[in-house]
Image (cartoon, rainbow, N blue to C red):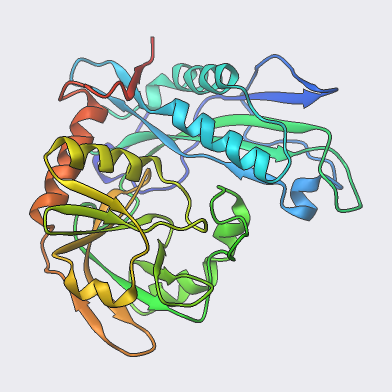
Length: 336
């Protein structure tokens, strides 16, 4: 197997197996192992026509002791259950979710990057409406599957500050919509604005709230946070996906003697932060160097190097994920 682990992009690499199970007649079936990268799908499946689809993302890391650790998979299971409730899909029970994740990792163990490479095994659980419906209604059959792929950093810059663009021309999600669920439609809604940002030399988009355009919302495919007065501050909104990484960073900040606030963040408050960043499973933390408001052309500058607190949080979380520091929170599952 010829993989340049240290220069791996955040992309798809074919692995050996994936794991699948169908929900039919009101119950989940046995887990099936497949070596195929493809799925057979009915032409009238609700996933194709009405967006009845959800996914998750989590990572596994190989430690110095060669053990494989998965970070907080039970939280991903809970979030997928919440999404399933939100768009009327069959919920995947905790035990099936965890078993499928562990099985997918073990079957593809040779693709777990070596310790110290900066790469990880990205795990993608997927749930979608497989049953045929032509009217707008939920499916009666669903497919849950888990595939894995080795990845490098989400942003090619790695743990380096990036530029972000504020745009008012696009919304990621509507108030009272599906913003708090991890459904593909939210990401489809962000593609145009992300493309514009990339063409302008920005790493991603910083969205404002869709109702008033007054408050910070999501940060592209990640949650936003700001740091000032020894306080970790992140937006509160029903349109924001509840990030497991963000939740973990809040706990870490509190354990480091900081305060933490989850509240609406007015746009004007951007100029008061000492450090700002984006956080999520894929990137962990991406420090932000500069934010440009597309409408007013105002620039918010935070420095070309990662801030001290962001660096400390990033290193602490990564050390727990890889087993370099004790997991006092009980976050890590070791794959036996």
